[in-house]
Image (tube, rainbow, N blue to C red; front, side, top):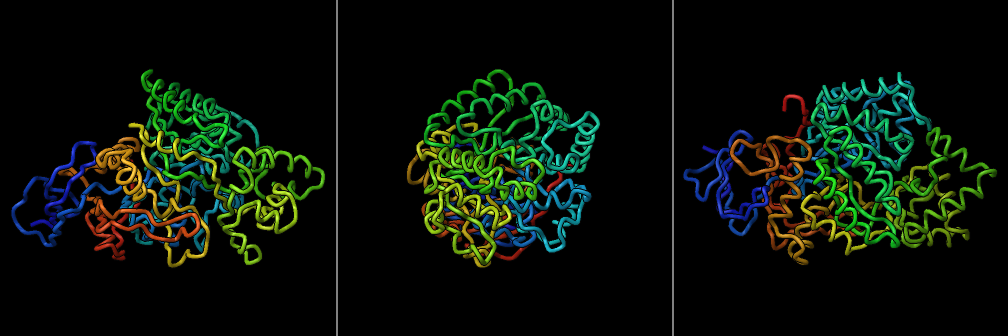
Length: 532
């Protein structure tokens, strides 16, 4: 007798094969049978006529590393059908922790919008972090990467320099230790200090270790605007020389002057693959990016960390230089009216959340660049922003590639508690948006291809051996949804709105969503690659 029997679903198995009508039997968290008709009655029978059954969606690019302590059910993701998230992306992550430099790492995480658990960073390495997360009871699975930013901070702090050979060996040791414990690879954030201070040679040495363990090198590359092609060349070089599997995070071309580079980027990646480099990319389906407002601040000002940055911002000696360079970056991203503040915690400036930089400058009777400086100073550099700097047409072009998977670049949230805080809608709507807009409305992708880009393709990139497909013997991470109603509802103006259309989500064979409602079940766990 099956624990669950799904009958008469339109099965899309994650392999990019054509859908078929069939039944799925689940026993003890594992798919035991998939066929046109399964006889017998399970403990729980789901009549799924008119619904699509697919593997649970795997978010290859998430930042749920610390929000999971506040929202362990990750409601915004569960209601999208997400069952596993790859975390620790963009070089920003919660381990390893050198407690002598713990305050530096905390400042770094806060700058990027990470809210710490009540007891701070109480762990040192991967296993301690994973064990602590497991203890809270999870609504989904997490597959953590080692964050290069945290790795570098543990050894070098936020210094802008090349590590000595001894320091590099210590970084390699910490990376090896994390991979031995079960981390899924290494992520880099090469526009974010201190990751941006790393030379290619440093990254290559670390990537060789990643390759040795058969894990993933995921990179927020060094440039996504006019330097996009050069940044891709660096990623390709690292893949070629190290033999690591390379994932280009959230592939895009920022700034109107660079629209059109997305197609060139896809051609460059394809040429590299033909030459034997294992490289692919992921993407979120929105016309706006989101990151810290400090992304507008020049790289040289970040050396020494957040506290030094604030001191330099406040110095009259550097004011003119800051204004010139911040204005240049504002214009690259489309101008002040296309940069919206999305994440302020202080009561003093809370009302500015949702306003664009041009509106704030007018309110303060100053230039946009001065407004950015003042806001960063008053908020101690902890300000999030949404940048409307992408082309809808190019988003669609990149999405259509067979080698581009789907990742939200968001985090698990709970609308009932996070309501009122401006954020990017991708945390609530990425996967249903693909199915509702790009499959059903625009017809850019077939349903089978779209689901493959969220499941089987991702599992292959990450190295998940028993997830991502509907297949006997695979873990029962599944989603059952209505193809006619699945849709994102989160918008830039009103982001805290759950997606619709997901009827059931199962994680490890247990429903986290039943009839479109969060169950409160906690079957998720931190996945550990060693031994998986």
